[in-house]
Length: 81
Image (cartoon, rainbow, N blue to C red; front, side):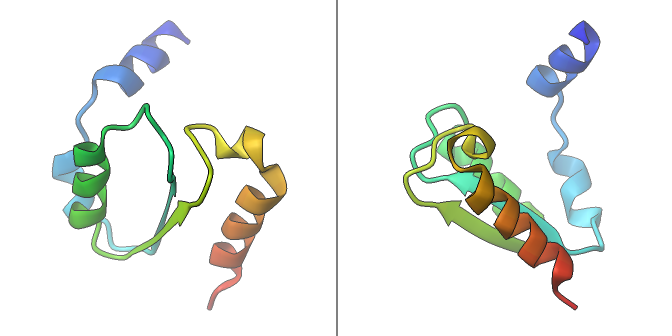
């Protein structure tokens, strides 16, 4: 668990993002103070097939704040043909 946490904190996967060849859903919280705006911008710019939803009123953990809303966005994305 400690290694996984460190990987999440320190890894820079930006060079891998342009190579993704599948639809990607990016959910961000409109009032998230954890993810820096520049990192969010990089993610959106570098991921070629992105659907982005900036969830109004949500911070860093929308799955806790509004689980039905969050899960609904994922379900809608997965059900698209």
